[in-house]
Image (cartoon, rainbow, N blue to C red; front, top):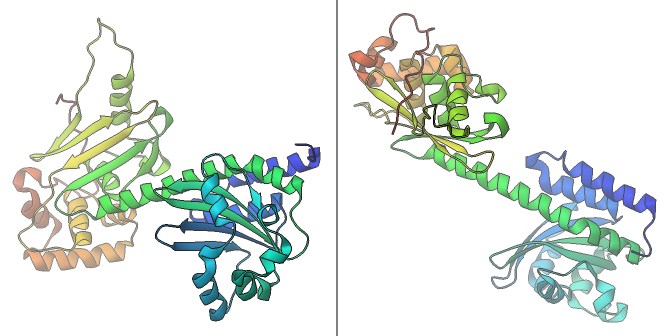
Length: 367
């Protein structure tokens, strides 16, 4: 690192610190902005390339509007890029590489890709590094300049940042995959499956919609909206995780709560200091077909939730809840929430008293 100064390293550390504040949904544009603050460039791009399938896409900072002729030229000529071969060879242990490291200026300007795509935009110099690989797909970072070439200091800074940027990108991809899995679980028919990913000290890191509904239905005043589990589950988890003591009986089974002949089972899947909870309950099967949202509304009001509480759980308006209830009553041939609850659970499971009273949790039970 012969060319680096203290000011260069400070700029790098400040940029990496900014990565931690990037919202999950803005990973690519913000990451590219951070990179351009470390190594100045006219255009920075994240490229996802599958050389075997000859597919690629890219995200640019700043956003550059190009003509359809330029887009067509890039699609046709991209896999002739002189850096792609070096990037494939560099996967796993390679650092950033400049275009000038592998090709003379004269040779580069003779390339069709330069003539038809880069030259009209004034781009003369490039530097690229690999951030991630997955089943033959390479995610790489590309920096483009219209002026002078990238210096050795620029290359060293990007080489220092490379593993941190790669880790940031992996974390954002993992979050996106997790959110997709939770959405898929929410959309599954035929059963109610809730998932809670636990953070430190039995806090809620991530929760899907079905788990939010189950906690609202089976526990009095659950506080999961501020990332805390109901107290009964916190106590159960603490007992599951405490060190064994021969003098004190230890609960090792699932947490089970019962109501009106229906049962909620909470199973812990430990993983280090965190883990996950899987919440399951038999899916209601009304005689008349209800939409997925109508089933959710019926389920909550049958468990004693008011329209306001149901709206808050489902993140819709109370007016929308009332519209869903009207449709439910018509489909089931009933005229009240009590009759709808009787239809769903039978007499033993119908809410008693006012709708504002939520049922308490059942006892702890073994498997």
